Length: 246
Image (cartoon, rainbow, N blue to C red; front, side, top):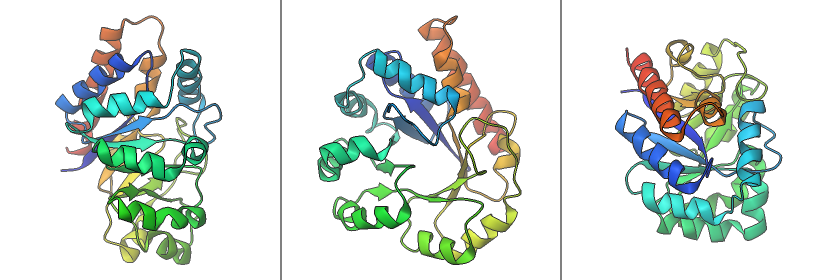
């Protein structure tokens, strides 16, 4: 069974909504939720997720929100914290690892943390038995892939193209997938540009997909009620899960 990871911007519009949304996503087959920590400069994300970050921050998002949300959902669905390095650095990685372990969160996705710097924290992550997800890009050489994936855990985040999330760029991923398979047995999940239209193509040769902008577009809509947003996102997730397993 191919896996579906869903990115959700925390506390948009509020904590209770995020909890309800995540629990609904579990019911329609989402395997892992990527709980997004809003940040003022999300450099890897396109305008859709950037706008969601800004709205959540304006609405008063606090880091404690992810703890409260995780307390309600992480024991029911596999949960990762996705955020940029600055908030984790400011409070201390050890602080967040302690919180994550206590709340049954399984790991972190930090897109702006270079692998060479992330390695510094690997022993600390291992101490807490938590995962720091490694990224591989289509531009990475065989040698660099071997370096990145040497101690990878949980899954490899394969970036589908050079750029930001939410765009419709295409790239032949077969060579990079083959290079990753030759370097590690860790599952490969592909992200960037995955939606209900592209999922069937993106899943080829990999073990899962990561979907963000397609869901967050619905979060950003001002013409929908909260119930409609949850229904729309859940329906999209159901369709994508069927597409990647058909």
